Length: 187
Image 1 (tube, rainbow, N blue to C red):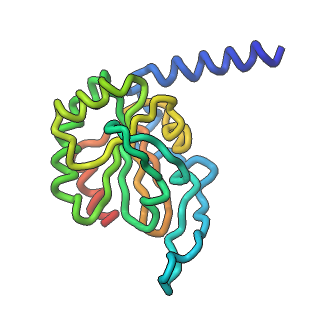
Image 2: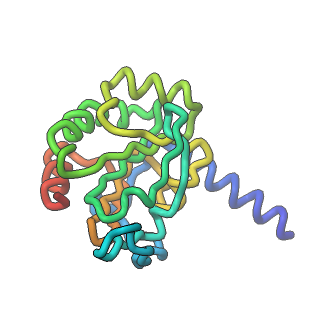
């Protein structure tokens, strides 16, 4: 029955999303979700140069943990790292100070965006405060829609987006050294 299959798949997905830092098959990058080809946008008003390509994954809108509107398309044309986390995740808690330090060190050249899910907004706000992550924005992905756009099923995970629109998703925890190397290459 189709309804039973949908329910079973939904329950299986929920179980996978609830697993904090499930072991990845390899520490390397995961294949990017199918929709990775950049799509050109209209040139900016009054501008003469072509606008940056917007990868399909960045075509989302969300609310920040502060309740402000956020458009992923605003990240197009910039070097960006998205950090996927959950407030209750022990690995995310251990990574948070390193992410705060990386954002302070590389924030002039790379845009950082936290993508919080699998909990409620007050817990996300407390996490940002507790770990000093206010130097970059965090979206409250309460329905995991942004996670799904990037093919993320467990945290912590990362998406590195080049100014040209290429997206590399890493579905495993990164050491601070590996993160620094990737950020230097991205900038």
